[in-house]
Length: 124
Image (tube, rainbow, N blue to C red; front, side, top):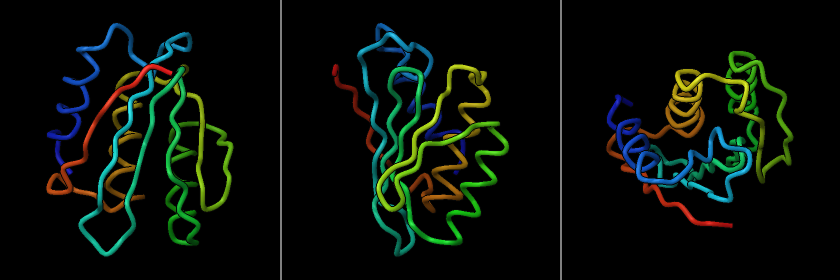
């Protein structure tokens, strides 16, 4: 996946009064969702209150990938197997968050630019 999806995310976030990935007080929740190119399942990633929350895939191969992503982000996740995973973003730089989102999309969810995920924000 190229920088195209990151540009789309950045453009969307730039239109908001606060960035939900870094503003722990923000009541905004940005959701990135779509279908992967492969025969995988749909995916969703949410940025809210300085955290990232995403669909957890209960699969041993995906667990190994997620473990690698968490080590790189130096994060401890709250995981509900087969449902969701959540961890803090506040201590990460914007570049680290970009890398994290791309790794989740490409490596964990098997998405690509042609997946064309939708991005929306709501106030909670």
